[in-house]
Length: 284
Image 1 (tube, rainbow, N blue to C red):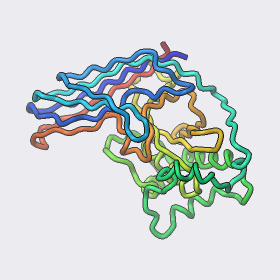
Image 2: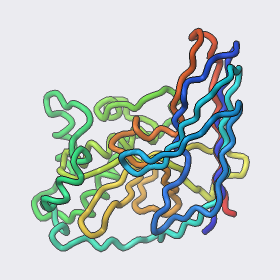
Image 3: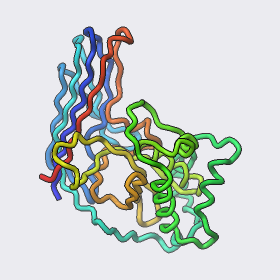
């Protein structure tokens, strides 16, 4: 399946401002089930762009500006080929078929911070909620992860949230609602409480049922590492498992590390007017 992704981000200012270096994570990750066929990045005003890879292997563009401006436009046009199966079969190592299991020493060393919870849990309230998904020893590992994924989708109502940052898991549970990044963060800390290695993923979702006029959006989900099977995608927002229709751009320990566009400006706070993001993901 070939998909064309168009992503336009526009910042507007009342007066010309000096733009600081912007960090862009907009290029999908090549993998066994996703291949980039073509790509272009356009930035106005002109920027000197340096491409690097971060500690997680994500492709990062650093845009350096030399002129003041009252508008910043960042646009990408990317063609990818995605062939992840809709009903994947995960070849999990026998040692990890049943929960609880123990990662090998090498896996524990490599997973590192991906196994450590990111948010405080004063009083153990969150851990108590998480343990409610474990019905006993010898629970099927993949079934347990699916239960957590579905349980979050059932308990949390999705809502568009334009505020910056990510809600803490207990806040999301208390509110009963959150954005896709809030639900992904809730899932990640939940499975880390259970001893799994997990990471945050940002990218795009292809939804063939959306009308062409829909402005679209970026998407956030999670991945869990299981021996032999590797990193498996879990999308609690849509109660889905596997990478079908997901186009991963960046992966990291937490959402803050994988923002599509990050950068500031030098000027008065009131100079900032608004930011507009438009995304389309369509069959090509």
